[in-house]
Length: 388
Image (cartoon, rainbow, N blue to C red; front, side, top):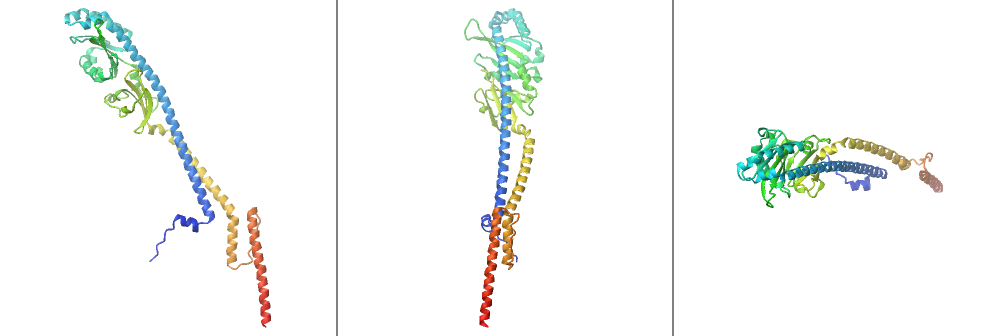
């Protein structure tokens, strides 16, 4: 049976089996490969961090602009509705307890609502609801059948009441109206009594085509990214797709402060609070697609680095081989001497200074051995003659 080869440990190979030349080759190769890997890793990390920071800054600037526009729009709607609430016809209509009294001023209310539609060009409809008898006056560019106002307004208000601000204004970003055909912004503003402080007699409802919603629903310039408008709890109230309005943002609990950036679940998430309103604008982009553009650059860098590494390995091997050529030559000559060839000498031409000294030392040693052998030979001959 064949004996199993015993595995020689690396330490034993290093200490006993490997020549100095082989050790130097191994060390040089290890150093070159290590430096190459370090260069690739550092370059990749630097490139990905640079791309992440660049995208973060771009998204932050864009979110800041959109948040400012959104805040301006909401403040404009708020100012318009405050002015409407103070109108005498609105006040009288909402505090009317009987239908007859409300009907007397309903024409004036209708004209006030028409003025709002004329002032606010993106308004779809405006309605005033009497909180005492649930009667309302509706005026709009779309009929109630198309908007489905009568069946929707109370449900839509109750779903968004948790986002009510300090002035009791409630905003809804949804596709509840128009039977789900489009997303609109609806503002619900309480009609406070001008006679009794803190008393609410009704509600003004204004539905608009807001440009922020339009921007959110359009495809971003940056591929694969998504933008959302969320409430403070992280619930998406508007986004790129219709189904998003019913979803909850999983990272809502991580949104803190007025703005920031986080990396969660393989995504780069930038967020910006909309002024003093209870909403966040969020930009979300998968990290895979963010780094996808730099894969080609990393590939070129990897190939270039490997080529440089191979060149370095070849040059180092040739350099070490040339440095150890005289040593190998001396070893070969010593092997020849050990086999009995005492005439062996080393030519020191084409050698460096240190190698020449070794060669000269070897040749001198061999000459001394020849001299000693000659003396021994003469002495042996003399001894043989004396015996005879």
